[in-house]
Picture 1 (tube, rainbow, N blue to C red):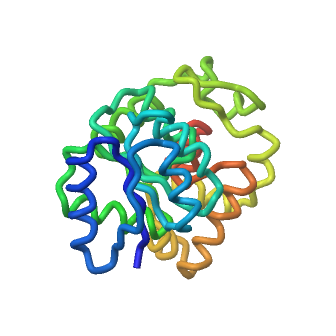
Picture 2: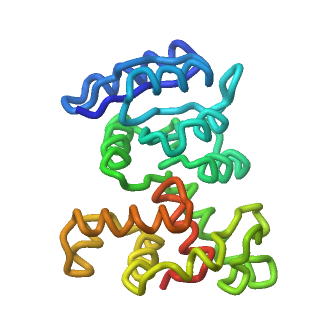
Picture 3: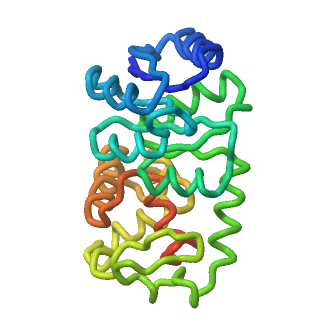
Length: 231
C-alpha cells in the first residue's frame, strides 16, 4: 500500500481528493491536514510514503512544508490550481517530486501518486513545456551552460546549479544516467536503455542525488537540462 497524507485547506476539495485516493486498491490515506504546520507533523507522525500537497495554505505554505520534509524519506507531490513560475520553481527547488494542476482527472491523479511512489518524477504537461522552454531560452551568459556550474551560479529563473566540483565527481556511467533522467526516462526505461537491472538504475540515480546534493529526481532532471547534458 502507498500511504498518503493529503494537505489541502479547503475541506470540500480535500474530501474529494481523499475519496479519489481511497478508491484505489493500492493507496491508503493515513492522515489529512488543513495547513502546512499540520501536514509536516502528520507526515512525521505517520511515516507516510507521500504527501499530496497544496501550495496555498495558512500558517505555512506548501513550499515551506515541502522544504521541511525534504530528505525525510517522504515524497511530496504538489497539487495546485496555480501554475505560476514562482510556485513551480519554488516547489521543485524545495525538493518536490512532482507538480500537478488540480484540473487533472481522477485516474491521472492516482497514476501520478503511483509514479512518484516508485521514485519517479511527475510534472504536469503544461508545466513541462514551460520548463523546457525556459531551459531552451537560457544562454551561456545567464548561467545555464556547463561552464557556469560554480557554487552559487544562477540561471535567469533563480535556479542554483550544482557545483562544478560535485558534477566532476560523477562517473561516466552516472553522467550518462543523469543525461537520460533529464530526458524523462524512468528507472525501468533506464534499465532497458543501458542494459542493466532496474535496482541498479535506481542505485545510480540515488548516488547522483547524493553527489549533487539534490533532493529529488525532478531536481536531477532540471540539473541535467541546466548543465547541458541532455541530447
